[in-house]
Length: 153
Image 1 (cartoon, one colour):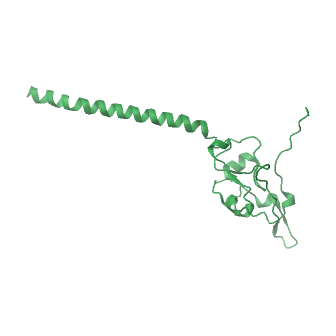
Image 2: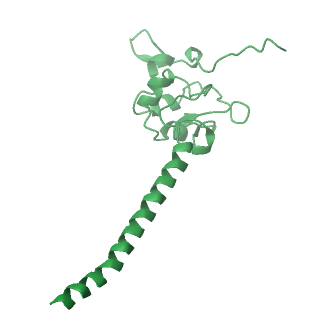
Image 3: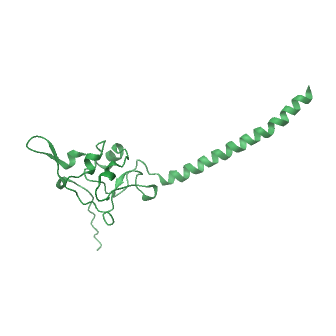
């Protein structure tokens, strides 16, 4: 009887060691992956000076409302909008544009605003009621960007 018990212990020890080693490796890889992505993802934090499409809510409200679906990007006829990638230092998946490379052409019908399913691009911010009480989009009401004065130059 004693020999069967010893044989069973000898058989299970390597399996136990192998399991513990694999578990430790898996935890190590998961921790390393978390550190890498944790450094890249800025989800939910507003990035300074991000130019959003016309009609965008204030940044914190915009980030809460935006689904990152890309419908506004698809609706832009000039391909001015991009969705932020991890290396862009902006909240991932949110629409933005860079005026020096792909400016917003301020389309008269503002196609990106009605394309937004959540209201992160709010029609009321770029619309006014006509004589029939219907909301008509008006690009002249759009407020985008932030002027920063450089007093040293």
